Length: 273
Length: 173
Image 1 (cartoon, each protein chain N blue to C red):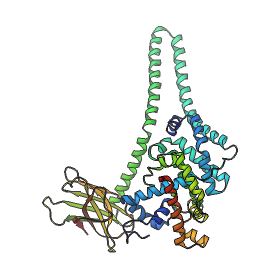
Image 2 (image 1 turned 90 degrees about the horizontal axis):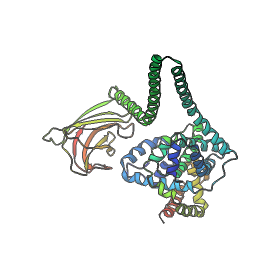
Image 3 (image 1 turned 180 degrees about the horizontal axis):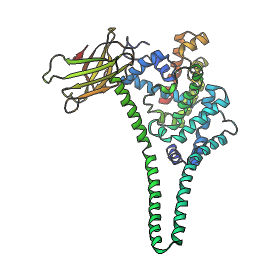
Image 4 (image 1 turned 90 degrees about the vertical axis):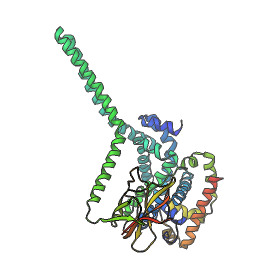
């Protein structure tokens, strides 16, 4: 892979990346670069279109005899499993409603009133139950998202309490009036980085701060995410996509175009080792 | 019925819509799987798995992936390669980043465009078709193709690149 020498990934390697035929060792670095580089990402998108078109225009074969029936049978089984659950719920509701109504007909007036109220309550609960089931189904994507968020938070917590994490404080260079400060927590082994900053002045429209890892090997800086401060001048970069096993000699922050740069183009405003 | 309407019906568990979707895409999915796996029973397994995924998670296809046809073509190929890779304990393709294939829909849904691409692909010299097919349908790296065919690595790269350029020109024509 020849990224360090040139700014972008060669087309041949992007083609292999798109096909998934690269060796595992090259994948991480390339994925990190693609996630940061608009040009490579766009070219990869074009290659994927080319490949999808190539795939979709291959000669078609007929599916094996009976494949449609086998598929529909699986479909039926899938649908039947859910339908069985719904039917069981419905049957229990119908049974309760019927029994309540019979009891109501056969009972004396005071009990009729009471059992009528009970039946109404049961009917309401059944309706409410169905409503809740519907609501729960509607919220399933949100539950999935929250589960993912929880997993990420757990990972973040483990990282912050990890023993093999470097902690670096970044100071202004040159010294600015509002004393901006940054703090980076970095694990080279896992390629995980959390950066927080405070007292940062706002950036001009179309610009953003960009965080850089300065490799100890002296290789070019590795982009580790763009960010803009909030009204109080606070900002954070959590788990940017960066390659693992990069020993950091230091960290720096520059002001770049909002979409990020492949290499720093302006003076360092914060740095730390 | 358009794909979006079909998927909406599938999301409402309409089995007739799913059967229509099967009729529309099963040959494409099966053909790609068969091309990779070369075993009809395995290819059918992949086809059923891919299409059942549409049945179970129709939203996953609609919201993020653009055209269903293009998505299915790519997924069928990747799933099939994964079947082969599971045997050799290699990295599954689905863990890879697939950034923003936003033009897939336009590219694959326009039939006349696809006819142009098909014509170009059919006319590709065999020395260009073969390495592209080995890479795409067999999941071989450029180096592996070079070793297997005895062709210099640089030549393999050039031929694959040239073939893809031809596809792109047909798409842009």
